[in-house]
Structure formats: structure tokens, C-alpha cells
Amino acid sequence: MASTEERLQILKMIEEGKISASEGADLLRALDKGDRGHPEPLRGVSNPRWFRVRVTDLKSGRNKVNVNIPFGLVHVGLKMGARFVPEVDSAQYEEMVTAIRSGKQGKIIDVTQEEERVEIFVE
Image 1 (cartoon, helix red, strand yellow):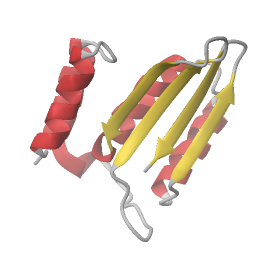
Image 2 (cartoon, rainbow, N blue to C red; image 1 turned 30 degrees about the vertical axis):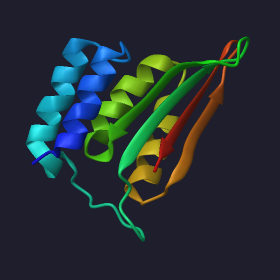
Image 3 (cartoon, rainbow, N blue to C red; image 1 turned 45 degrees about the vertical axis):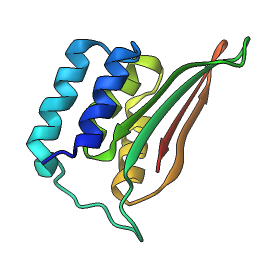
Image 4 (tube, rainbow, N blue to C red; image 1 turned 180 degrees about the horizontal axis):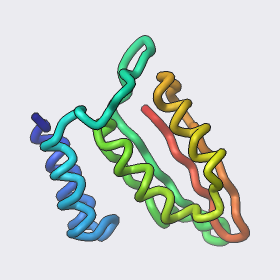
């Protein structure tokens, strides 16, 4: 069962316009499903709690997107993050998924485009 903190975080992202109401509903449904969607358990010293996507405008230096998603929703988060980096090929995507499943924490993606920098963290 999802914690109140996770639900409030999703509602806050909707309120701030970081995600749409439809995406928020998908996240809340995924929370209700729990961890049934994770075929391989995560390994590591401690389980990560957050999947964070940050998109920075390189001209202004300001964050365009800074979204923290409960780690239990990582697969939904990957799909959302893929919208911001359409150039990520399937090999990069699989490398990222493998890093997440192996328990890697910290920055797992850092892609710089012409005007944007996309970073993905597991914390």
C-alpha cells in the first residue's frame, strides 16, 4: 500500500504542472498495484526511495523539470523521462534499467543536448 507521503508528492507534481492529471492518475494507480510489476528484486546496501529526473536549460541555467517519483513507480518514471530524451536508443534504455535493477544509486544518466541537459538519479 502506498504511503500518504508518496500520494501527496504525486498530487504536488500535478499542482505544480510538472505532470498532467492523467499522468498523476497513472502514478496513483501504479502505487495501488504495489511492487507486483518488479520481476527482479533490487539488490544493494539500502533500497533506493526516489527516482529523480532533472532537465536543465543550458542557456539560462534554470531547471525546466525537477521531478521526484517514489522508486516503486520507476517503470512509469522511465516512460515519463523518455519523453524528454527521445534520442535515447534502446541500448541506453536497457543499460539504465540494468543499472537500476542491480541496485546502482546516484546519477545513472547524464545527457546533454544543444539546449538542455537531462540527468536521472536513483536516491
